[in-house]
Length: 102
Image (tube, rainbow, N blue to C red; front, top):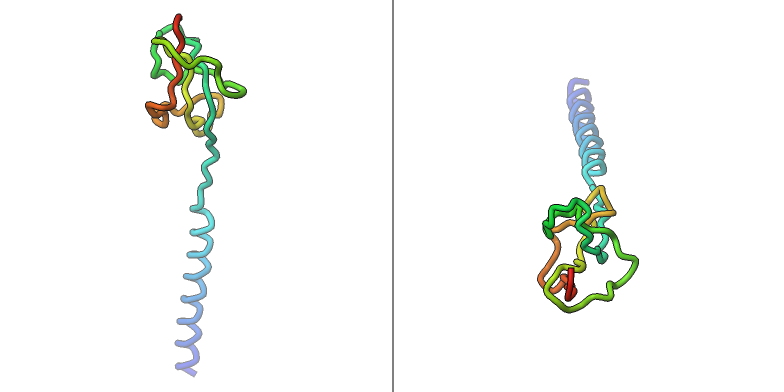
């Protein structure tokens, strides 16, 4: 009887541990819902800061600008939680389009 009680206690501990482990793993999975797209530089804040994500607006396709010295658009991942803004840390050198005039 004592041996049965000990085995039952061990089995209960193992099952409980597995149940909490499975639940914990299921809750830890986080899915990032970012996408990449083009954003026009619009300087909405008026601070002339090309690194300020608030100065960009989403583009519905590929921007028409592609040469010049002034920032026109960037290709970036959307900011996590704010899909209307670019995550400026994801902009690469080849992801920038310029225009001839401001």
